[in-house]
Length: 254
Ligand code: PGA
Image (cartoon, rainbow, N blue to C red):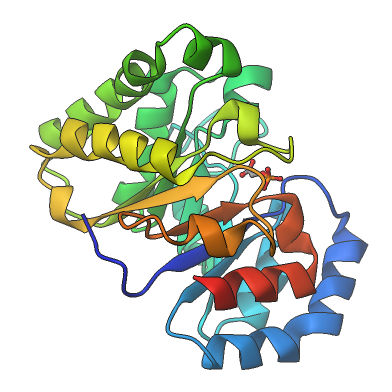
């Protein structure tokens, strides 16, 4: 697993902003964001919705800010109405793609097998996948956190092994109960969960280049404490990342 150096903050903008609002955000904060990136060794990546990707990729092309998509197709190309391939995302200039976010697992019925296929497509297109996993409140209460995380990881692990993938990527641990709830995981919970993830992935070809992120109600107030987690390589931030001042606090706190 990667160390504390060179952490990353990824903003998952979900469907919070319309096309015009995202362009306005870019106009208002472009210079400040570029200045912020120059103040830190940490990496910043923004994942706006698909419609905003071309202007964000163009705008940040010569900067240290990376751009990512919130999803990609599990197929390379063909008759898949409404889908966008990882290859297209790469051609636009994206560096990352989130795959398997719990909202997609819930609302779009994405299984862990589908998520592994998406991650595979991302690798194949030279996009770094950010694979999201996490248990629900009920699963944690029933003592099933480890079982759930391992079963979400199993298809990803076989995909890495079968294809001998050595490229770096991110696993974002996002407990469903922490997303958008104002409740975050504790450092103890993160240490325990990151341990589970690290040991599940330890025999994969890419094990030395995996970054472990946490997501779920990260904001300028919760970030400094969460950042003390030793195995943490960064945050996947939803709502708070659309507020520049919050984003700045998070980036400067890790
Ligand atoms: P949140 O979302 O920061 O708004 O809780 C995180 C996520 O869903 O990636």
